Structures are given as C-alpha cells and as structure tokens.
Amino acid sequence: MIKILRETHLGILREILEVTITQEDYNLAALKGFKRHLSARINNNIRGDGTKATWDDDINGALGEYIASLGLGKEWNYPGGVGQPDLVGGIEVRTVMSDDRRLLIKPKDKDDSPYVLVIGTDNHLVWRITGYLHARDGKKATFKDPLRPIYLVDQAYLNPILELKQ
Image (cartoon, rainbow, N blue to C red; front, side, top):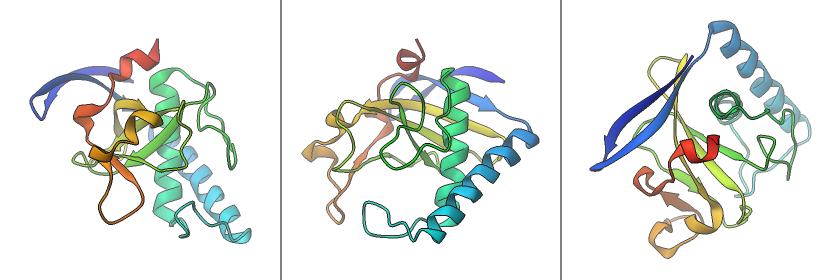
C-alpha cells in the first residue's frame, strides 16, 4: 500500500511516500540483499570508500531499492551490478534506518542520476521515500562532510519525490 503523507521537516512542508509491504515481500527483498552480500564476500568486493559492505548495508539496501521501485512505479534493476542503476531509468537509491538521517552522495556518483532517499521505520514493513536529488546538486561545499570524502544532504534540501514519480 502506498500513501502520500504531508509533513513538516525543519519547518518545510513536504509530501513523502509511505510504502507498506507484506512480510512475504519483506522476506523476498531481504533474501535478495542476503544473496548480494554473499556474492560480494565470495568475490571480495570493496565499496567505493575502500570498506566492505556489512550484512545490514546489503539487506537494507535491497529493501530500500524494492520499496523505491514500488513507490515510484519503476522496475527494480536486480541484480544490477557495479555501475548499473538500482532502478530502470537511471534512478539510484540510498537507504537509511533513521528519520534524522541525510542523503549520502559520494564524489564518484553519477552527476546526472537522481538519488532517492528511503527511510526505514520502527515497523519493518513500513518505509518512507522522502525525496531525491541529482548527484551534481548534492556535491556542494555546504554538504561536504568534514571527516570523510562524502556529501550529506539534509532532507530539507531534497526535491519532492512526487516529481520523480511522474
């Protein structure tokens, strides 16, 4: 089930998508994340920042991609692969598990690709898609993390997710 919610974040009214899935859907998407992680371990894959992904990264990432595909009505590009977009149409997904988190943009992210922020809630079957931003718009000094070579964009700066759904 997909609902459009209107809420205020840092004084800005925004419309977000709330996506509720079944336990069966959750299990299916989590299993795909599990398989992704196993493949990465077997192939000794390293992330762009030089670290190895954790189980949580891959499982929650796969869940976020599945949620975004449902919410935006776009096909999930699973299993995808390095350099392939998460969703058909060039859409990339970033998943976080706390509402106060920001959209992470990496220096090597494709400038013209939209990056969607998906947030898990306390209920593992309910997720929120809060907005998106093209990578080029997130690679600004304002968003530069002082400790790591990444950019962290507050949700208040994201474009309305309904624009991407059209």
